[in-house]
Amino acid sequence: MSEEVHSTTILCVKKDNETVIASDGQVTLGSMVKKGNACKIRKFKNGKVIAGFAGSVADCMTLLDRLEGKLEKYEELERACYELAKEWRTDKYIRNLESSIIITNGQQILSVSGDGNVLEPENKNIASVGSGSVFALSAARALYENTNFNAEDIVRKAMKIAGDMCIYTNHNLSLEKIKVTKNSSECLKEGDEACCCVSNDTNSKAETKIDVKNMKNNISSKNIKATTRKGVKEKAKK
Image (cartoon, rainbow, N blue to C red; front, side, top):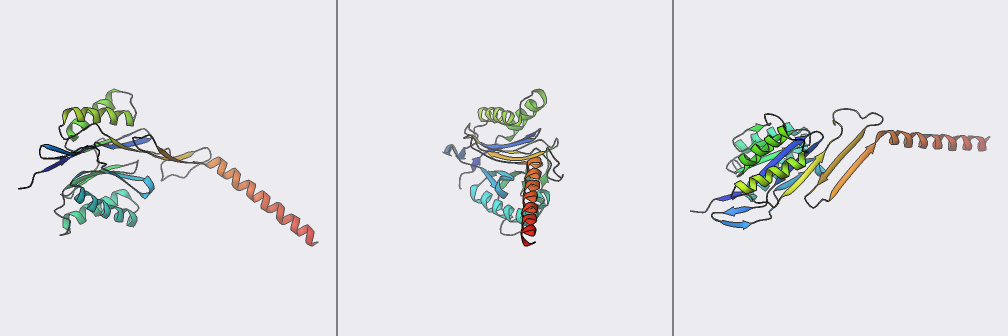
């Protein structure tokens, strides 16, 4: 009889305009730690959607490949997750895959499991799956409600507590962040700024900002130049 693989605590916290998801790096086979720096987070759609997974790596990657296809077909995160759960439940090739997945687009957090459930956290701000999820979730809720810590600080401190308490969780974190300063369903107005920021635990960042006011000014200046050129050409013809 093969030994059972234990792995991972995944924690996701949304607070203010920032959503952070983190996983530990430990993979345990029976009584032995097989790996201590595994990465259990995957990004989709250029970092706009991030998923953390707990379970067998082969099972998780198969399901995440299916999720990627659903995200391409359905723009709405919730619909993509529902379709994945339905396929996971009914497809004879993947129905026995064992995994738990947390998915976020920065505005919504969803957890998907093989029993067909697609769940949004009760308070819509904190979700956790995996071996140490009880410890991480409890600590994150306490910190969220009783401190002024931002999302990243809450995740780091809660994952440290989970690593201290759970023998299948270590302190080697992989961390990704989505920062949203404007609801994507609303039109940007002059003076507003849209920002999507994705970072990992090595503090590397990829950030894109759009200043609507400057954009309008640039467009106006180009129109003025085009009009001036047109007027010069008309005078030359005369």
